[in-house]
Image (cartoon, rainbow, N blue to C red; front, side):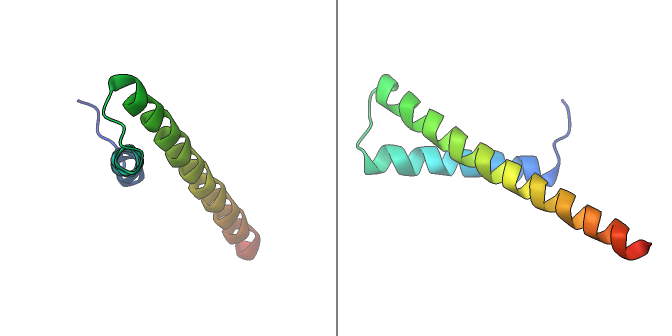
Length: 68
């Protein structure tokens, strides 16, 4: 089994919690409704992941500039 980094594990957990929260708020108890909630939660988690990666890139760039 391939090891995941800490960030990936956290975002996977966030995706699961977000899916459950959205489904509960919408009383989504059918597969179709729950799948829609999952798709929305996945989109939210992906945006958060990309935001973090962007910030990490900015921080790495700032550190490289300061090193010069």
